[in-house]
Image 1 (cartoon, rainbow, N blue to C red):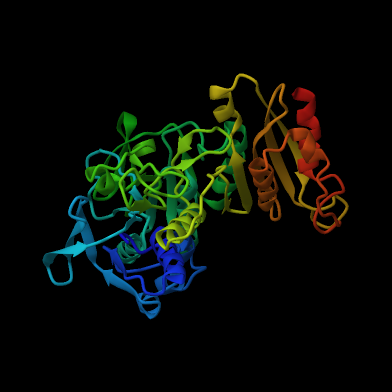
Image 2 (cartoon, rainbow, N blue to C red):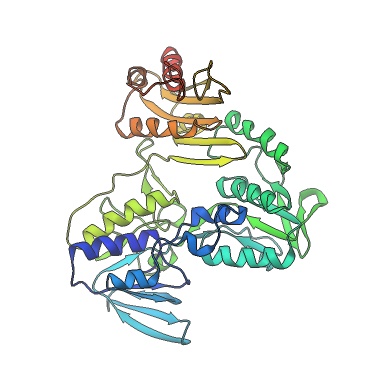
Length: 439
């Protein structure tokens, strides 16, 4: 196993359950195993007390399952013909060979770092691993981070911006595009601006970063922003190079190509997690989605197959949720923009609704956008932005996408109803009825 986080250790555990006597060696170049990187913003914001709270299984716990975990062991090369790995043991400062019969690649992804001057300065930090989080927190405490600049307005960027406001810093979020969260349509992303600015986050859209200085971020046109700490929220790049150098086929954004059983194009070599691509069940095209949910599911499938069983991973529909300020945000399938790029028959509608019955005390508001295909009536995707209790409705749409339902079938879904939870006609029902007229 190359990598001891979700995609690797989930595979290891499932292989172990099927093969009690299998020798399993896990090589991890970092210092933690089986952790939740998604919890890092909540660690910074104070909701999580320590780094160790984000660890699901420690090396000691994994060794109790007879998984030989070797921390600070970095795989430098794969000799497929000789079935040998070249491994750098950073603890003993030596390079050693390790043999294998089967190999599982779970090398994850790394924060995307733009090629601009100053990108390697110590106070410019990405957030992907617990080692990243440890370095970020140490830098923040040394600098006292009174001024934090977050570069990128995606999930991590927004979550980290809010976390450092709660830390007590003055936060500026810089985004090169004309909207936040490129995974949403612009009309839905627009709803995030006012709450973020009300929290005290300065949001600068259409602003490209040209470089980093020790105490400032330089932007296009000669502008600059004070910065004790810079957090990169520009997404991640899959670590597919190691498998690629061994001859594995690489696909979307350099991610490792796998089949439904998580097998790479190399004999006896599997892959799972942020380093490999998935099949998008709505678009029908390969895609790269770096989420813990995907990594765990792919790892399970790989582990079953490594252990001699049979399992397949069908693909994803791109479901994700987050919370920024008081707003919950959910999306699944294709956005209107994504659908229109390849499907001239795509159509979309938006509806306003409440999270509970309107006559109940303090009903929250929500906006739900639904996307479908004219002619066939096929459901293509949805987005939700709203108050508490709104975002998890996206799971209903995700289930419908997996079932390849039509929009008209959503109208008759027997969804739960009681005044403290919603209206007799859920906003999803209303959006489906409205979209039918457009289809």
